[in-house]
Length: 163
Ligand SMILES: Nc1ncnc2c1ncn2[C@@H]1O[C@H](COP(=O)(O)OP(=O)(O)OP(=O)(O)O)[C@@H](O)[C@H]1O
Ligand SMILES: [Mg+2]
Image (cartoon, rainbow, N blue to C red; front, side, top):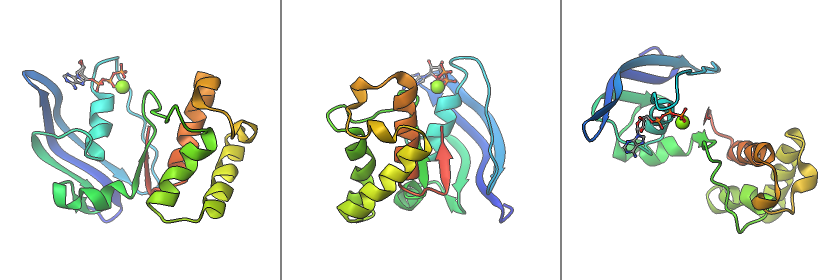
């Protein structure tokens, strides 16, 4: 593996029961590279990216992330570096936009409330929804919820962001 590759797939296969969802996938992604994977609905795009942070298991081959082979021992280390914006956003509906953004930095990175809120407001401003910080996700449009999800991922300062 080249040192510059942050994600590699080597001969990766995944089945859902009898359904062969990923067929011998080989790819390498360099640090700083932006890769768009296109394909019809149901072709396996979400499955592929969910394998990168261990939300799905694969059956054959090897995936490496930031030099770590993706196995259970390394999963915690890898997840700390990998952010994900889910297809359906997965915002917490009972929490305000601001609280959605500050939860993980406070709990996981042990950031103070003030620091976490400052960081969150910065990212909300960058995606042009700073004025929606005190609303609940259900009060926002789909695109606005998507921007909240992006800002929430960025608050964890990931080295890899999956969309
Ligand atoms: N948990 C699951 N159990 C069984 N089959 C699944 C599961 N998740 C996905 N599949 C199947 O695997 C295939 C790939 O699904 P996936 O969600 O990766 O597609 P996608 O390319 O992201 O599609 P879309 O563009 O619609 O989001 C689909 O045919 C789907 O029906
Ligand atoms: Mg999908």
